[in-house]
Picture 1 (cartoon, rainbow, N blue to C red):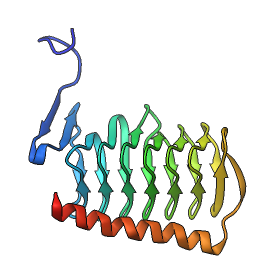
Picture 2 (cartoon, rainbow, N blue to C red; picture 1 turned 180 degrees about the vertical axis):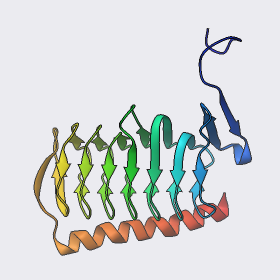
Picture 3 (spheres, rainbow, N blue to C red; picture 1 turned 180 degrees about the horizontal axis):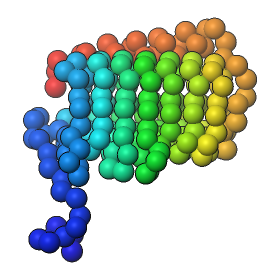
Picture 4 (spheres, one colour; picture 1 turned 120 degrees about the vertical axis):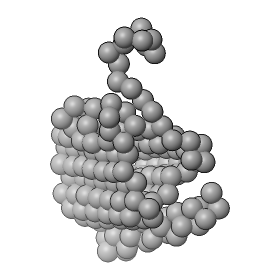
Length: 189
């Protein structure tokens, strides 16, 4: 019955500005700050909030059809990322967070100043503490709480050690570089 009259499925509507897929779902329209940028082929659906200076790069999908997604100021969601939620498991990404290419975030909390490595997965109820790094390809399982300033690596992901001051500075630099890239991409389309 999908797409037929009388269906109990929620309505999906969207805007076509620059062919971006910014879609209202079940009465929830994404809230996007004027200084945030969403790539032309990225998809943002439903109860999503993008704060100031957020960059959502090419082919990323943020789908908030069962709970809320919020992306904090100055954070970036890189190419091909998938962000989703479950009922009772909202997704919160803090300020100055970099979510690397092909990462998956699902119903978790990422605190401020964090780097999520390329291809990493963070599952429902997990919390990544402020100033931490999740290594490329790591799998952070449901409900895991990572202390601030930690390096998480492996499958399943485990805290391996505390980050050095140099590594913490690198996490912040990465977010700064992506804020500049966001500004440049916003100008070029």
